[in-house]
Amino acid sequence: MDQSYHEIQQRIRHYWFKDGIGEVAVGWLFIALALYFAGHRVVSPAPNVPLYLNLGLFLVLAVGLVLTRKLISVLKMHITYPRTGYVEYYLEASVSLPAKIAIWTLGILFVVLLVAVGRWVGTFQWIPAFLGLIFGVVLFVLQRTASGLMRFNYHAVVSVLLGGGVSLVDGFTAQYSLSWYYGIFGGWLVVWGIGVLARYLRENPLPEGGSDE
Amino acid sequence: MSDDLRSLTDLDRIIHEPARLLVVTILSSVVSADFLFLQRETGLTKGNLSAHLSRLEEAGYVKIEKTFKGKLPLTICKLTAAGQKALAKYREQVQNFMRKTS
Image (cartoon, rainbow over all chains, first blue to last red; front, top):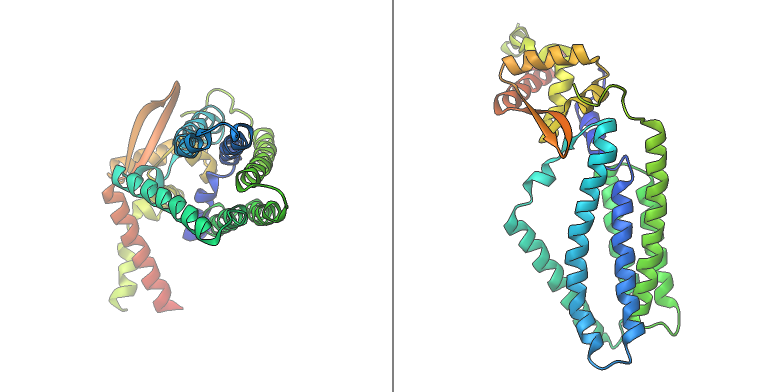
């Protein structure tokens, strides 16, 4: 009862990340992106196919994000809620349709900007390093503001080092580098997430006699 | 005695009770939470938590809905606008008191 008001609020924000399900789901999305970019290398000799693949990125992202959200929802419903309880956060309830459209528009503009800068510079080899840095900053900010969990700092460091590392490898095309970045980082997130989930399940067995009142 | 100090005697007794204060504080951070989550976070027994929630519901500070998430039965608790207002007023009164006496 002696916890401060802000400590309680912070602990409730941490709760969403407690089970590792978010990392597992996002990790699988990254692995899907890795397969998508690997597809470039496999089919690149065929005429016009890379163009369709470029357009397909938005499809992979849109379907991937919907499936990721659904996967998180299903896993939390069957694993987390019966064990440690259900919480609806303000963020889940407050993202309106116009806000979603604005986020998607900004995302598309960001990709277009990256492509334009790549063409202007004459190489796309820096993109994995840039994305690694962006994800690293996002994960670091997430650790400071929402998750409060040290493992998010590890994720941030891995993202930055991995992005920089694959950008420096000679002989990789940008798509191939991106495939390696998303594949390894996605695998890292899935393995970490499964480890966290396993510990969560060990520490939180199903309550006897039902979970509810 | 100043008005600020005297206002401590006007504290809302429903919220002032420690277990209920904890429940209301938790609910103020989220849109809603279920009975199990509140029980784990507060460390109260089912009976005790149920009694405190009923008291808060009677005061109009908490709305309780029996529902389902998928096939899972859930007792969802939400802080009402009156509950948010009461908590804000309570925090202001206590902070004023702490400021005047520190």
